[in-house]
Amino acid sequence: MKSIDLNCDLGESFGAFVVGQDELILQHITSANIACGYHAGDHNVMAKAVQMAKKKGVSIGAHPGFPDLLGFGRRVIETEPDDIYHFVVYQIGALQGFCKCNNVRLNHVKPHGALYNMAAKDPILAEAIAKAVYDIDPSLILYGLSGSELTKAGAKIGLKIANEVFADRTYQPDGTLTPRTNENALIHETDKAIDQVLSMVKTGTVKAVDGTTVSIQADTICVHGDGPKGLEFTQTLRKSLVAEGIQLGG
Image 1 (tube, rainbow, N blue to C red):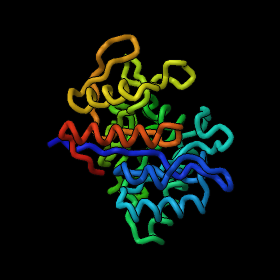
Image 2 (image 1 turned 180 degrees about the vertical axis):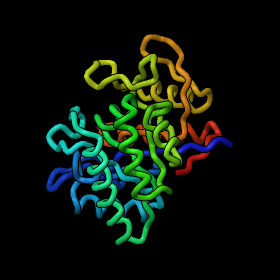
Image 3 (image 1 turned 90 degrees about the horizontal axis):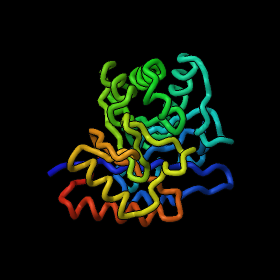
Image 4 (image 1 turned 60 degrees about the vertical axis):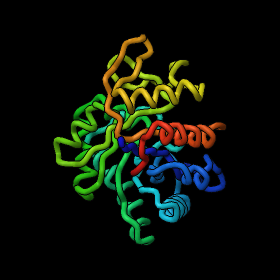
């Protein structure tokens, strides 16, 4: 029986502003990527997210991003590899502290937004992120876009990697995600998104926006729980995977 991880980005609330349905989503996923305060989240939100994930038995991951609260970490910031290394170390260390206080293990690291997408294509940036993860704890799993420079850098330095695929995003012919600035970047139809996931998991392929078939490895599936139908979609996807004989596990 094939096993697959189902992950979701969480802990994106900030102060009095509530984003997403973290507590409800945690009932249906196997791994949580918790924002570390730079692109979203804060110290109180991080603490609560760790506590909730531990209670639900969900694997906990750090979700570092660019220091860009206004742009939610989705704006490109041109900076040096040392800067990226340092702010990734800083953010992982912050979440690791909350994990230690709650006697639970930090399991993985998944970069966020623009940082994630840039690392998928830029080997120097990818190397800086992989080194930060390795230097903090070489037993951490590095999540990255399937077949990307980030997963290659992680494997090269000696990290265990998880090739990530996306349920609700469209793909380019080179295997990268369609930029969110494009109107066809997101898949809004539940059936279409589930069909894409099942194809990626069962056949190792995904159909790009131009109709070509792209080879892909699916170790972990990302769902987004902050949309109006996020919770409903996650529930439906989980049921569909189980119905196909696919075991879920982080």
